Length: 128
Ligand code: FES
Image (cartoon, rainbow, N blue to C red; front, side):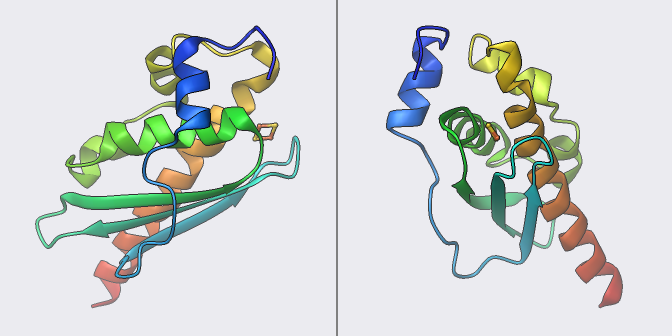
């Protein structure tokens, strides 16, 4: 990756948190980026009180997408669904200390994947 990345981006890219499958997930969201074709999948375990107990992701995409997913999952773990819904890609970028402008869409993918998983949970809950 180029010199345009902050240390925090590099750290989260080389050692991402919360990567993998979440076997007992009850909320799953998958989104693709029209800009580059990369795909991100978010899996969460949300308890009856709406607290995100665990979250994991899989990203078939670039380093910035992996770094943003890693940080975003750390930011929403232990939070409520309502709190997690408010997470914006800008907050993720700030947490990473910035992203090159051509990589902003990667952080949008993280925000959208989280929202898709939260929507999935709410739909399942409403159907009960
Ligand atoms: S280049 Fe597509 S998600 Fe980063």
